[in-house]
Image 1 (tube, rainbow, N blue to C red):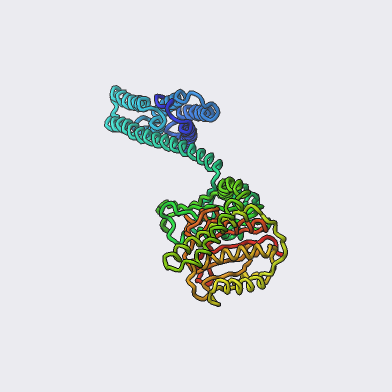
Image 2: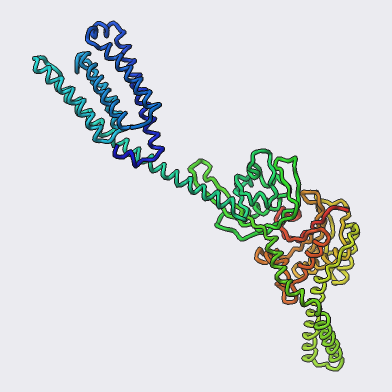
Length: 565
């Protein structure tokens, strides 16, 4: 067969299955012909003509062809040619035994001709049609030579029908074969792409989640399972499918970030990144089982993929979350900045603080003798910069000391009330500007936490000092309240009503020497986080739904304490 070497293995299997169907159909036809002989009309007309013997031999040949097509799949064209020629030969004998064209047995030629048109090249199919046509016309000529009156016109029309059938069916079959070959090629290409996709997605360091708009997880790669702590599963082996993000308490930050992105009209390409912290969690009894031994700081990016499927409900939408563990990156960046500072701290007190003290003292003496507005303004500028540099030196020295905490229990209610009174008086704030309280169902219940009280005071003073710069100054514009997180740990939230921190600034928020204020040193938040880490706690900036604002997301600093005292 001219096209046989060029077709795929799938198409070859289709050809052999079609040939098997061809042989089964032949068996059915021969059985019907034998049944026809059993009727009285058939027996009377066909007795003594050899019809029965021909049918029996035809049945035996049909069974032999079926066995060969089933168990001897070799030389397809040879088997097909032998079957078609045998069909034409046996049908011709039956045609003569039944009385020629008037018997109507000429229609049986359509069976082998259709099979040849489907499975054989056009030339072979036309040859089969020519054999059948020549036999029908030859029988009619023979009848004319013996002075009979055969239906010559019917014989000619049958031959034309044979050729027309072969041409039409062969062209349709060739078109279907080409379509099957194209589909097989596309399927092979798709399988290759899927294999490449699995290799890339499984080996990439970034976590990838595929979700529906309702937060239902459809797929995820091993990196995502590792970042979210979902290494254990109920037995499916996937570990990251068949649940909603909101169903897992520890994954609420990711779920909330995803919902916020959707509420902001997510879907127009790649969205700006967001940052969340997944805290330690261990769950073995829930619908999703997993364990995360260390907090993970994740950078999230969202993208939407919509594929219109023509369904009544519009389009099937999927969203993709790209996750990157930035904890190691942040630590590396901080270590690089602090590496050079380590050599500086040994001599900084003598080399910098003493000259600063001398400058400050000289400025104070000059201020007693100079009274002009211009001189006072210049002296104030010098003094402000001395104070700023001295504060930077103090912060750097704090980094080098790494004082160990005493870890005594701190009662939050009493501690926060005392801190509020002291901070309000020191900063000369309105009495109702700083609000201290609990938050609804997340009430910490007056628990104590294990944290060095001096360190906690320093951390909160730093956070409250930042809040003053952005708060409106109205009543309760700065809010400090303890809550319980989804895993039962105590959190302390520090929030103001000013504009939230943008994702661009959030990416560098806790890096040393990074600041957006001309008066800041860029070490305050870094020191606050370091103090929290020394006390077994975690400081981060998060977006949470605010019940007091109608569920709208609001940014706040969150201190997550370790085990309660």
